Image 1: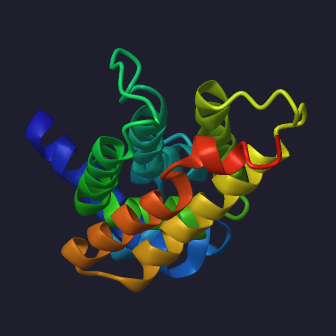
Image 2: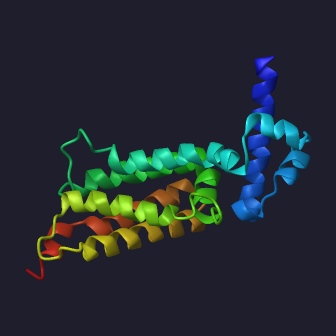
Image 3: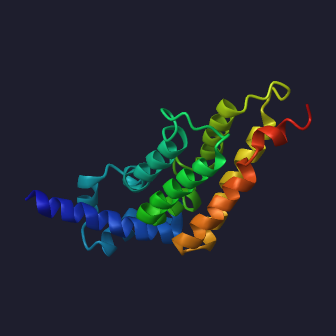
Length: 195
């Protein structure tokens, strides 16, 4: 009865997401998830090795999509930061697609990860954006690349401020587009001012 097994697994994940969203990773108990899903704790362990495995099942797909958005979207595309309007459209659209489909999971990954292996997700995301920027803007007079790191940090923090504040995806996407323009429009010229 594969259908029944898939239904039970989906039920466990649904209630686990509710619990992680409400209590965070460290405050969520497997017993509570079992009670809410009206199953035994032993049954949960038939589907998931432990709480880490269950948390992974919820947030890993979002983690992979966000990573792909940053690195893979332009890998085979000659678009660079010089064409900021096109990048603005693509990045904001990509972010909103992930958020529209997996918004709760994304915010659990960002805000409710304490105690999990994803606890450094924001740092990791900042580093991903920083690596992408360093590919586009190698600053020979800034060997530590502190400027790209500052820009990456501000962008990532701002992105999640917008997603927390605006539940309407149209408004959020417009704000994100403007934020991308603020951070990246003419960035080459602005960073070369000190040269």
